[in-house]
Image (cartoon, rainbow, N blue to C red; front, side, top):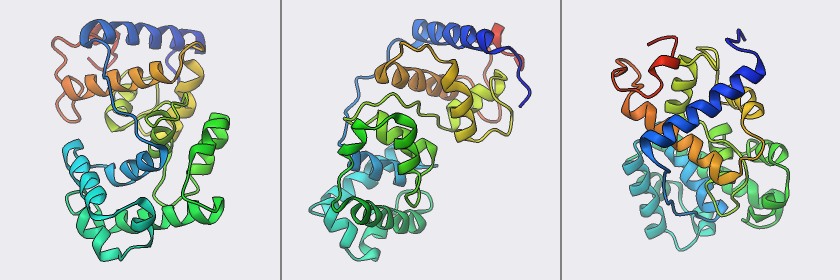
Length: 228
């Protein structure tokens, strides 16, 4: 990967970005923190889907099944029908049931609380063995849930901003971006601050750094952006 700055320079740039976005958008949240299995479910069904559609599908699952065990063991057509609003619903329905079954097979029950005691890197790797789980879903399961582990969630908005700032390459995957950016974040940041950082970069992507026609006027990072 061609880097714009040495490690120390990138770390200083990330800190500057964070401060500017806090000043512009304020501190995000507060957010509701689900149990880790519920967050895993939300993550699997939420990829490449509008937040409102993901939430509607999640509520439909809660209404349609008495527990995640019932969903795990339930009829596949019922799961697929419940999450119909989401993108790639049939594939996500299969991944969801298979992931819940695999957790049960590996742990003896449908529970992910044990990951709260693991270091972040092995916990991410464990989750990414599950069907339908990549780095975004694994990091969200650890960070957004009640586990509140220090894993950085990177979504497509966040990734696009990083690429335009040349902090990662234009074709970097979410996992590659994670592995490059996390060592450059302030060591003192806890799970809440990592959550804030993700939400702020996501907000910038939604407000200014659009996929096809970025709105650079008024962007708080315009003077830092090589592409502006």
